[in-house]
Every structure is written in structure tokens, then in C-alpha cells.
Length: 65
Image (tube, rainbow, N blue to C red; front, side, top):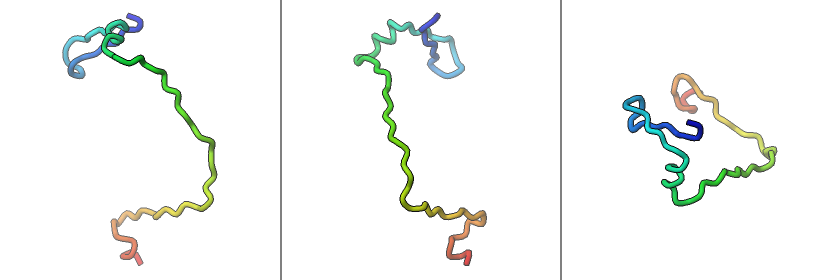
């Protein structure tokens, strides 16, 4: 069973269907590529972030004054 994928038409209902690697490769037209994620270097912000504090009452900020 190594390399096989098991699937059902509806989750938790019915029998498992076994898909072999050959069956899976026949379903696709393009070759499967292993993703090569791109990442950038860490940066430090130039300005401080200003984030409004949430309030439990649900009142608008002007109503709290």
C-alpha cells in the first residue's frame, strides 16, 4: 500500500477507494513540481506601528472620552 492514496466520495461514508501512483499520474496533464518557496530577508520598520486598543463595551473611540 506504500504510495497509494485512499479517498472516499463523502467523508466518513462508504468504502475507501485506492488510488495508485500510476492512476494519479494519468489524471494530470502537467508534471507535478516540488514548490520552491521564496523568502525575503528580515527588515526593521522605520516608523512605530500605531494600533488602536480594542474595547469590551463596543463603544466608538469618541464615545469613551
